[in-house]
Image (cartoon, rainbow, N blue to C red; front, side):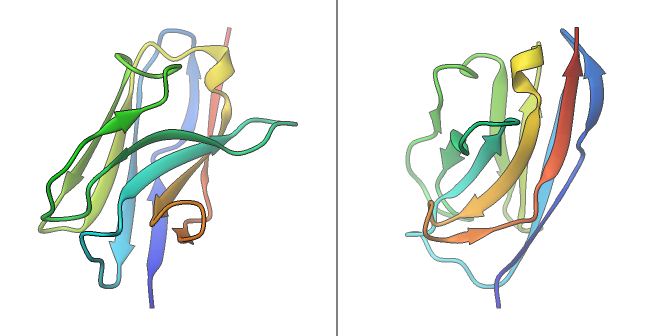
Length: 117
């Protein structure tokens, strides 16, 4: 049974930083890309970043809106996915979701990030 649990959300001011983590329980394969999505108030859920599964190789991809400010990474042995967010903007206020396997895959419950101006 796959389980994803996010942590690290909170409130920061514009320009601040936060690091999200997602603990993954369950067996993954190299076809299961690991990713982060977010959903802002009144908007649809959108892609943030993704990279290959634990112990797997491949490309890391970012949404244009976060490239050069956010960094996605993973700790293979611990089965933890991270999202380091820097230079946060008010538009980054959203619930951030950990994901395995794309939109039709597995989701965490999300963690709230609030960026105040």
